[in-house]
Length: 339
Ligand code: UD1
Image 1 (tube, protein in one colour):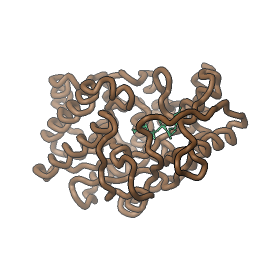
Image 2: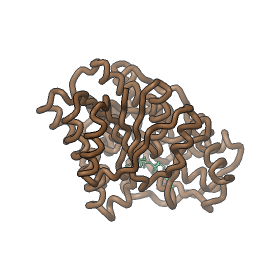
Image 3: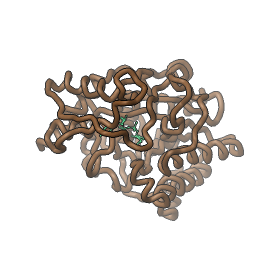
């Protein structure tokens, strides 16, 4: 069965391609390589023994998108990762974010509407909840005004899909709201490849430990949490990838309860920044150079998932721990720097 993965050479996309191929799906990747490397294809091939089909394609080029779908009209499902994801950059370049994340979503959906099988998985984010009033966060928690154009593209993206599903009963879709994806494939063939200075915690930790960054700044230790640092739900990217396969199978087997469903993807366990650092120190056997710095604008105090719906309705749960994720991220960092 032919599955299209947009952004399939990116961090979460590449891990999902591996899990899809492990389940026997025939995967086509499209990616514009704007934030990924062609070498990732070799990593996927080394893990699975199968080289996925790849086309370099920029989804903003509408006529090329039309041409692509016209030649691949037997696609059974689309997992749509392709998007820009740097929060700070989105504040500086809002129009670029709306074009990259919204225009392309519309183009892809318009083409999917021409297909016989209209199954669509969308990468959303826990950022849609903002600072939730209640923890853990259920899927029924209200969507809060977005803190950034990036966050807004996820909210608007979900709305676009939901409204399209209302008028097109053939379109079946699932929005997956990711908490904080970290880690790398245990084979160390694929992992996260942040461009420039990493904005996210775990790549910053591993780059500091390897000597690429001098010191990690912990953004704030005066939050109303047990140790004063922010709480997040860090989920191993391999667990996250597997959830996409389960969600896709749900649509392919007509098991969905409505044609637009939403699931939180997290572990259900919140960890503070200091706990994340401790986990890293434990699995790497080395001390991390860090200091306490001021708060980062836009950070929520605490966010972790209520996993009941994902566990009981989707039928998926995480199997790997924070330590597993840290260990794999560290192994990956050592591999890419020692090349
Ligand atoms: C961030 C984005 C979120 C996006 C997600 C995607 C922000 C404000 N939020 O989530 O919208 O969906 O990435 O990956 O950018 N931290 C430090 N020092 C650092 C880096 C991070 O202390 O150098 C802390 C942060 O304050 C936060 C935690 O580590 O408490 C996790 O940060 P990060 O990895 O950037 O993820 P989020 O902010 O949760």
